[in-house]
Each structure stands twice: as structure tokens, then as C-alpha cells.
Amino acid sequence: MAWDLDQYRRDAESFLEQIDREYYLQGAGHKPDLAIDPIYERFEALFERDAVDRIAEAREAARGPDETRLRYLHQFALDGYLGSITRDLETRVADLEASLEVEVGAETIPYRMAPVVQANEEDSDRRSEIEAARNAVLDENLNPLHLEELQRAHAACRELGWPSYLDAYSDVRALDLRALARELGRFTESTEAGYARTVDPELERTVGLPLAKLRRSDLSRFFRATHLDGLFPSEQMVPALRSTLSGLGIDLDAQRNVKLDTESRETKSPRAFCSTPRVPEEVYLVLPPIGGREDYAALFHEAGHAEHYGCTDAALAFEFRHLGDNAVTESFAFLMEGLTASSSWLVSILGTDGANAAIEHARAARLVMLRRYAAKIAYEVELHGPDADLSVMPDRYSTLLGEGIGVPWPRETWLSDVDPSFYVACYLRAWALEVDWRESLAERFGDAWFANPRAGAWLRGLWASGQRLDAETLLADAIGGSLDFDRLALELTAL
Image (cartoon, rainbow, N blue to C red; front, side, top):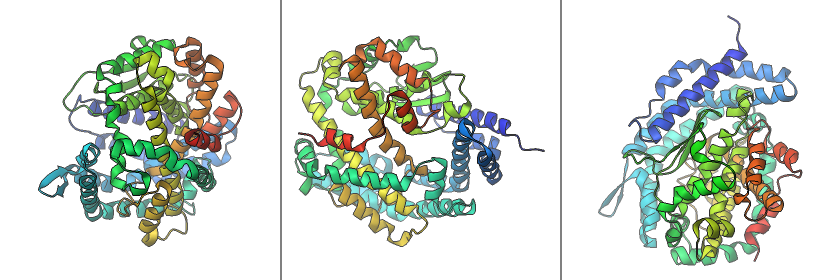
């Protein structure tokens, strides 16, 4: 039987609908277990080696928008193929993570809960003990599986004809990942002089230590920022989102395709998330109404995804609605998340006194995160490159992350701290793109753009294009210009 590309697209869309709905049902607490294996079994033909090869052949002959569609589909097939040959290892890792325990003195902590306990621990030495114990468990029990998974993925990319995993994803993303890593290296250099000056006051406030005396284990407490919890009351979290979207001319409760799930369930995820079984017809925004700075930020981030997908033009091709460059959707998520650190928003929506405390912490936290991700992409380019020597990569990871963030960095997380398919590049480019969206909105509609329906209409115009265009092309078409990490560096380190 002849291979049918259109049928492949229909099956791919059906697969994503079923898998995303399953993740929604389990994550929202409607069912206790995540039953994805039967779905993968029904659609196993999507992720066979033959599918990757045939899409590659079709892509090679295509031009213009057709080539873009096929490139997006090529990445989908490659992701799925690599996932299919490592799924047994992923399952074993997930099972172990759910069952392993960390011994800290006389206390036993579930492996997955250890970072939460660490973030809420006031004593720095105790935080260090928790992290060291967790890393020891990781290194002994999980890293051998992570390493085998990495080696299988690397070998598969070479068998498919690319020199390396790095070259495979540079190709299917149409992105020079080596050049992006060099550009982020320059970002790190340009923020060096102002780094400690920006983060030290917030580190002193949250963990009682300056950068020069900080340990890696203290960072979770820094990001937790318990001193800000009172500024973000739980009872105002959902009303704040409704009010913000209303100001943009969006009635969240009237959006039939964007379903708001706020019910309390015992097994519901403790963090907000967005699930997209059918774009734009069926989008879920799931949130537990807990409160606190982190929960507000997470909710608004996921609301950015939900509105982007919910406003996508239904007439677009499957690839442009469900696949594509995720730097685009992440940029809109960061835009909405950024409101929770905006003076105008904090005062007008929450009536907050002391908004400056939230703003300065968010700036310091974002700078630490960007320098961390700049170090991560440099590391991942080495790790996944054609000349990688895996025996030295734990030390390279420790060195690059330690130098980037300015604290001694553990070796043990050299594999668990790596996301598949260079998703790090999406986050980094999204952070830069968010600055363009925010500045353009302020120029057009003022600092309180979130209270202007015309700003909402402008955003919906961008959202309608889904991910038909990559981040760089969408920016050029919408407002001109290109991604600028220098401007981002200046914003984060300016006095």
C-alpha cells in the first residue's frame, strides 16, 4: 500500500488529541492513572523509522510554506521515533522516581517531594543536606537509565543520516543552535558586571546570603520568595485573571473553547497547566486556587498559552495549529506571566502596596534563570555534538553551570537537567521575544495595556496565526526587527 502523507497528518492530529486529553484528565484529577501506553500502541506507525524517512524525502522536494509544514511534521516524527526507542527507559525512570526515597538524617522524604521540602526549608545547611541526599539517589539509581536513553537517541540520529543529535535538531528546527549558544555566551558576558548588584539584595532578603556565599541548594528557596506571599492572596488569583482578560476584551467564562477548570480534587496537579486536545476547539486551563507569587505567575503563564491556542485560526493546517516553533507560544506565556511583576498591574488589579518588592525579585529571578539557560544551551550543544566525549560531560556541566550562575554546581544532574529536542532554545528566544511584545504594547496602548480592549484585539491578531511562523519571522512581520538579547541584558541589569 502506498504511503499516504495526508493520512499521516490526520493520524498525527488524532494522536495528539487523545494524548493531550489523557494528560488533562489525569493532571486535573478526573482519573488516578495516566493511561498513555494504549494510545501509543494504537498510533505506533506514526513513530516508525519509515515515517521519519518518508517525511524527510517529502520535505526535501518541497518549497515555501509546504516545506515549513513538512519540517514541523519532520520534528514531530523524529521526536516520536526517539521517544519510541527510549520509552521503556522513561517508564522505568518514572516508576523509580515515584517509589524512591531520600534519607536525610532521621527523616525519609519521597524523591519527588524533596525539592519542595528543600524550597520550604529555612535552614541553609538543611537545604544542602536534602539536595546532596537527593543527588546521591539520582546518581545511583536514575543516571544509568538517563545515560542509556541519551546514547540510544544519539545513535538513532546518526543512523537517520545526521552527524549528531545537535545537527538533527538544528535541521528540523531550522535554527543554528551553535550560533544561538554563542549569542547567549555574549549575553552572559554583558550581564556579568551588573549580575551580583542585581541579585544580591534579593538573595539577602530570601536566603540571607549574597551570591559570593550562595550554594546551589539555596536557589530553590530564593525562587520560592515566601516574603511575597502576602502580596498575592489566594482568593484574588482567579478573579485577577478574569479581570485582566476582561480588560483585554476577553470574557474567559464565555469562551466555549477555553475551559477553565478550578474545581478542587484530591489528585489534581498542584500547579496550573494548559492542555490542548484540539486547537482551537478544545483548550483546558487547569488551576488549583492556592495563591502566592509562584502560583500567580504559573497561572498567568498557562493562561498565555491557553489564549494563544484558543484564538488560533481553526482554518490553519494541522502543523500550524499543533506543532511549530514553541518559542512563539512561550513568548505569549511569558508576556502574561510578566504582568504579575508589573507595577501598573499590581496596583490596578491587586491594589498592592509594596509592588516594588515583587518587581525587583522577579527581575533578579529572571536574570538568574536566563544566565542558567544560557549556560544550559552551551552545555547541551557540547553534550549533543558530534565530538562529544560523554566521560567528561559531568565535569563540563558542573563547570559551565557553575560559571554561568556563580555558585558551585553539582555534577550529578548532568543528564536529568536536559530537556529533549533542545527545548532550551524555545525558552531563551521566547524571553527575548516577550520584550518586543511588551514594549510594542506599551508604545501602542500605554503601560496599562492590559486594560485596553484594543490591545486585546492586537494580541488576538497575533494569536490567530498559531505557530505558522517561527519566532523570528513572526516578529519581523508583526513589528519589524529581530530578537535582541542585548536589550534584554540591559533591562535586567540597569540600575
